[in-house]
Image (cartoon, rainbow, N blue to C red; front, top):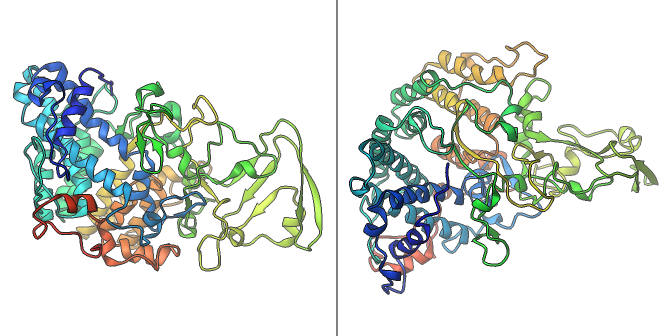
Length: 568
C-alpha cells in the first residue's frame, strides 16, 4: 500500500484529542486543527484512510501481536529472552496494569475513532462517487477488523459508531452480539463495493471482506453462511494455493495468488515508522514499531554454538518463543513438507575458518572436536533420545528431546530449540537490523479452505470437510511421495483434528489464540498441551483485563466494570 505522508501530523494531533478516557480532562487544539479541516479534502481524507490501515502495524508481525494472539496458546512456551512471560504463561503479571494490553487498548480505540470519523465524513471528502464507495468499503472492513480484535480480546466493552470529539469520561458496555451484528453489517457493505483485486498491495478487496465474513459466521454459529462466503473466496477470484509450502515464505514471492490480505511493509525501511534509538516510536518491550519483527522472535541462540556466528541468513535470535513438544509432534516430517518448510533443526558452520571446541562425552571424558566451514555445527533432534554411542562419535553437538524438554514437557533448555524459520528475512541490509520488509499475512487461501472445512464439519458433512482438508494436505506432501499420502477420511474429522491441522498449516501466523477461543478449546488445550502455562490458565483467561488506566479514568464505574477474574 502506498504511504501518504501529507496531513499525517495533523491526523496525529486530532487523534490525540479524540482518544477517550484520560484522567486529566484538558482541551488542547494545536494550530486550530479540526477533523473537518483535514478530512473534507481529497488529500486529507486519503491520508486518513492510510492512517487507518497503519494501525495494523502495531500488532501484525509484531512482538505484542505474537504475545497476545499466538504465544498464549498450546503451541509455544517462553524462550530464554521472553520478557512478557505473563502473556505466554498466564501468570499474575497478566493483570490490568499490563503495558502491552494497555497500549493496544488505546491504539485500537484510537483507530476505531478514526474509522468512525472518516465513515461519517466520506460524503464530504471531495472524492469521486466511485472512490467514495470504495474508500467507505475499506473503512467499514477496517472498522469491522478492529472491533473484532477488541471484542475477542476484551468481550463486550465500549462500542460506538460515532466520532468522539474532545475527551470522554464515561464508557459503555455493549453485548458481544452488538459487536458481531455491526461487524457483519460493515463487512457485507464492504463486500458489496470493494473491487475484486488491487494493484495497491495491502488494501482490502472483496475476497478479503468475504474471507473475513466466513470466519465471523463461525463465531455466530451461522455455518451455512460461513461456508457460503468461504466457497466464494475459493472459487470466484482466481486464488490458488502455492505449489509448495516453502514457496509461501520466499521473500521474493510475497505477492502471490494465495495471499488474500496482508499488512504491507515497505522494502524502504525508512517508511516503516522506525526512527532509531533517539526519538524512536517505542513499543512495549522497548522496541520501536518499525517493520515486521517476526524474524527475531522464534529463533534459538544458534550463534553461541561451535562453528557458528550471527549472520543475516540465520537471523538475529531474540529467542522469545520456543515450540511445545506437542507442536513439533503434530508433524510427520517424513511425509509432511510443512515441517521442513516451517522449522530449522540443523545448523552448518558459517565461519570461514575451522573451530576447535571441547565437550564432555557421555562417558565423562573430555574430548576436542574440530568443525570446518560447512560442516554440521549442531543438530536439535525432534523426537526420541539419541544413543550415547551415536552422540559421542559425532563431532557436532546434538540436542535431543531429553536435552531440550523435561520429562513433563516444560523447557529444560530454552536457549537451544528447534526454531520457526518461516519469517526469516535474508534480504535485511545488516546482521543487526531489527526491521524486515516481510509482509505480515492476515488471510490466505489455505486458512479459508480450513475455515470451510470447519463449517462443513459443524453442518455434519464430514465427507466434504475431509475433501477440503485434503486439498490443503495434498499441497503439504513431500514432493517425492504420492499426492494422496496425507489424505484423511470423514471419520478423522473432529474439532481437535481441525485445530491440529490449523497448527500444522498456520503455526506462528497469529491466529492460534483466536482459533482456540472460537472453538471453546483455549483452556482445555493449553492445560493439556502446554505444560509451562497449563497449571496457570483459568476459565477467565478467555478475555484479557481491561486496562486499569481506563477503569480509573471513567466516572461511571458501576456500569463499566473490570472483566471477571482481574479485579484488583
